[in-house]
Length: 140
Image: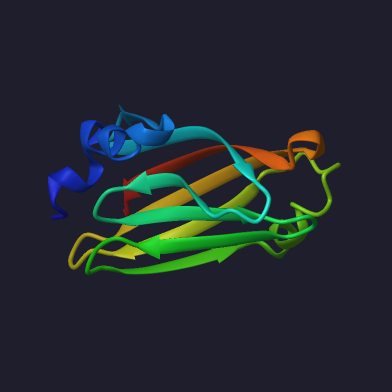
């Protein structure tokens, strides 16, 4: 069984407090993270933090988006995205979010992560507004 602290919403809220991350527990032991952040072009910023599991950093550029999920523990983390998501940032007319799915290899109790990121470019501010959420649950 995974460390109960890995899905603790209070711990996750405290970890992302500097940029306003919210966290709550959903039925079934699911951890829900959400955050909204304005990030200037060519600057890397943490968008979501799941303590002991991962941190999602984004770097907006003129027509590309750097997506860097970083592990925050001794567990292996494997991420994948649908091919349709690869070009979602450049095609601003798309209404679908960037979607990432991850498997966190906690020995004997793997966790699944599902991340959605919406982005809105503010060219006058030379920045992008990101709205992100993550659901983290035990694999069944």
